[in-house]
Image 1 (spheres, each protein chain N blue to C red):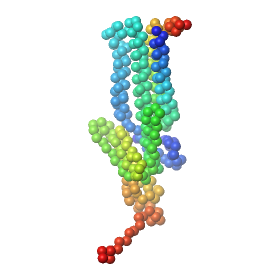
Image 2: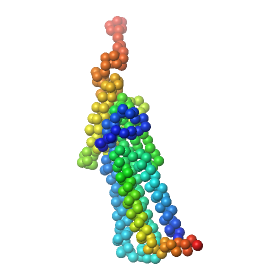
Image 3: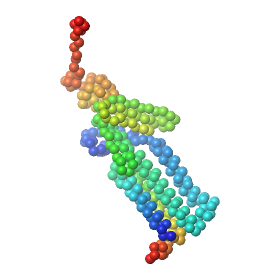
Length: 217
Length: 75
């Protein structure tokens, strides 16, 4: 989790709303992109230093023009391909604040989605670590299930998923205590004990009186 | 032969548009860790380096020397 400075990250962020953590996918998620890019750079360098020696006809006369054109463009476009993937990775973040859980997703050059969720809507948080890569690098998948029609959040390749889940649960508990909300969240009705008596009474479910033995008759 | 140079410039314009959009995104939505601008500088540095190297190769081709371009364009 990155160290966070208290600045405004999204439009609806309140002035007194503190960011607790900011998390991105681990760079290991970009491995396929790195591999493709490395392969293309390798071809480019081979095109400069090896191919002309093996096949001299590539750099003779008219072919030289096409050859230079193709190799130059290969390097240029490979660089911008690598950088654009890195930009999309960098701009995709998830934030936990004292009031909200927010996911900001940059998908493509012209697509940006900001999903914010108040913490009382969180019903369940789970993490999943499976496979060699996840275990070696302590990565995982964090799922946040929400109440109602709010969409669930799935964060992939996040570092230290267990700690993230713990932090979300603790923050949700504090949020519920602060706002006197009966827990629909991860801790269920446990939150009711931290609430002022008047507020607790207001949020308690009405007692149903059963007719008892008379009802059977 | 100047058509190859025009083609190269045209394709570079597409690349340039792509790079400008990415630079805008980084500067518009930068985060306090400032990793975006740092990577942006590296990206433009590498790109300019590739341009310079490419041009040094391209200038060796007979179809891109200035007189040839003008002759090819019928000037």
